[in-house]
Image (cartoon, rainbow, N blue to C red; front, side):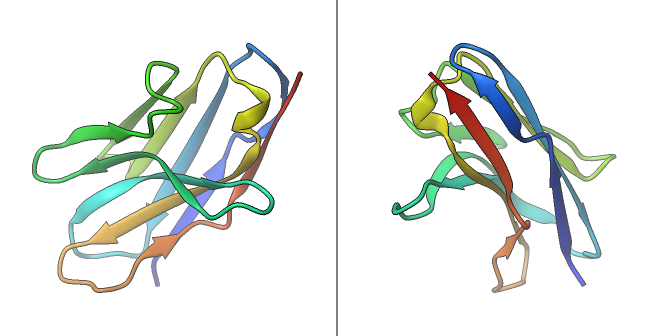
Length: 118
C-alpha cells in the first residue's frame, strides 16, 4: 500500500521560510512524477511544484517561481519543498503527490498546513 507522509508545515510570518518533506513507501514501480500541490479554503487544489521523468526538470507555478525550490532524494524516496520569502497568500494545506509507472492511480499525502501571517 502506497503511503506518502508529509512533515514540516507550521505558522510563520511573512518573509520567513519553511521546508516541507515527504517520504514515500509501499511502492514497487518507479516514480514518474512527484511533487507538491496546495489548497487554500474555498479554492481548488493547485500545482505548486512537480518533478517529472524522464526530464527530471522541475515545473513551478508562476506564483512561487523564484521563491520555492523542489528537490528529491531517490535513496530516501523523499521529496522536499524549500519555501522562502513566504507570503500570506501562500497559506494553504500542502499535499505531496506521486504517480508511478504503469499505475493509473494518483497518490496523495494527508496534507500539512502552512500558515503565513502578515
